[in-house]
Image 1 (tube, rainbow, N blue to C red):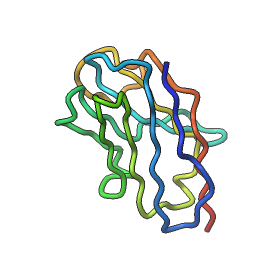
Image 2: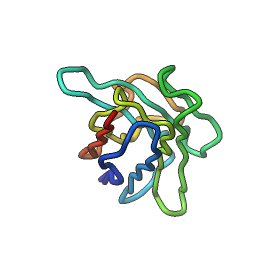
Image 3: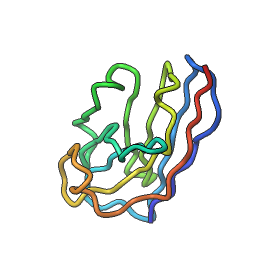
Image 4: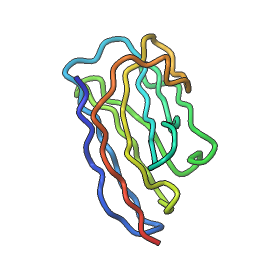
Length: 120
């Protein structure tokens, strides 16, 4: 079970950190995806199971940072310089394997989502 939290209303340029707590971390990669109204769910970031490799969508590269603390069964998404186009429901997900991937079909467990709203 995945529980995402940390969403909220911020202004453009602000920062926000999302957390995703898992009932138990296996040796699986973790990812963050987001879905804005009327749009498909898009990849945001992913981290491999030991936290040594990360991938980002081009739109968030250099602004967002994904990390994980396996001792706390938690994955984080630090989001800086937020823009209105970053507004969406953010979902964390557990991958089927060890390695990080951008394809949502490679993830089989999903959290309930946390809403991020960015005002201009």
